[in-house]
Length: 66
Figure 1 (cartoon, rainbow, N blue to C red):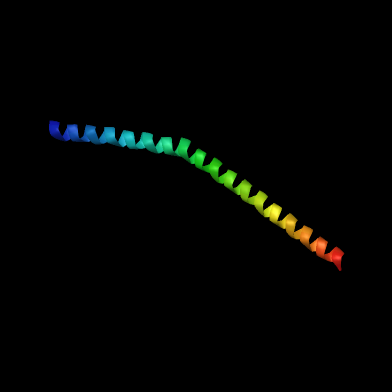
Figure 2: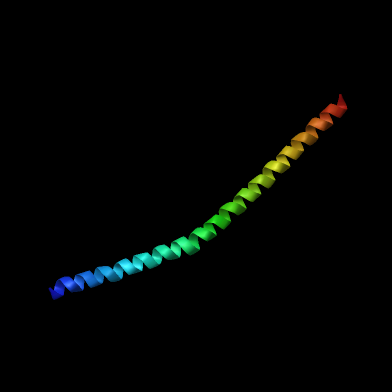
């Protein structure tokens, strides 16, 4: 029985470590990833806006030439 109790205690310790690491990933790493994704989305929206503004500028320039 002592050997089985030692195995259970070892598994309990390993499970506690897994829970701790999972909590660290959820609270820390995912927040950083979300910030990075939001920064990429913000940059993409700026890029699309600049391209759209240039397109409007070209259309206006062509319309004035006619």
